[in-house]
Image (cartoon, rainbow, N blue to C red):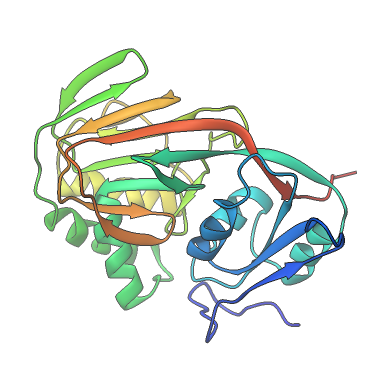
Amino acid sequence: MNRPQGRNYRPPYQPVFYLVLNHRRPTGIIACGGDGTVSTVAQHLIRRFTGLGIFPLGRFNNIYRSLYGEPDIARATEHILSHQSRRIDHGLASGRFFLGSIGLGLIPELFEIISHKGMPHFAISLSRYAAQAAAAVTPMPLSVKIDAFQFDLTPLIININLLPYSIGLPLTPSSIDDDGKGEVIFDFKQGKSILSSFIRHLYKRKYIYSDEIRMFRGERISISPVLGKKLYIDGEIIEHQSPTLDIEIFEKKIIIFQKVKK
């Protein structure tokens, strides 16, 4: 099978099929699709001995990209058939499973723009999308608690990442997939130009977190009030149905197939 062409490649369907090597218990389940498909399959593997294989056929393939690098069908097959595996973290956001990232504010708006228009080929075009997305966000005061540290802010962007990539961008390159913690990023100095520059530099892989947009790490995160807020979670947009978003991260509960580098 040839490698998918282009960053905006989307297959006509996103199937899931099972690889059964044991008549009593499946050795592995292979998710064929994008982040939503992978996350849906992974939630059924918590604390199980069944491994997760990823065959990247989605738009962004954030989860695959974070774990293995650029999507490559041949490499994906090698990982799945390697008989080698390791464990990674997952999270629950008010009881909803996620494997990659959650976003409020800018990222859900930017995701919808890119989904409609496609990922641009130039950073300057993406920065325009970011300015448009930032303009669509209505800033509201939030109370944020990261482990024992609590503060109030009125952000245009707040994201929680277990894995580096969100909507095709390396949002948190420092994310570690098996340490039981997630990265929380948010802006302190509001401004469309700040977020536009932020997204442009992320696209170029040149952004360094500073006073304007900060990064914290933690294993328990709480954000309120967020009732009715648009929420990006592993490639999907939902409307949050409770006043508080409570996030807990669980260490090394999901087995993934991964060939060990020699």
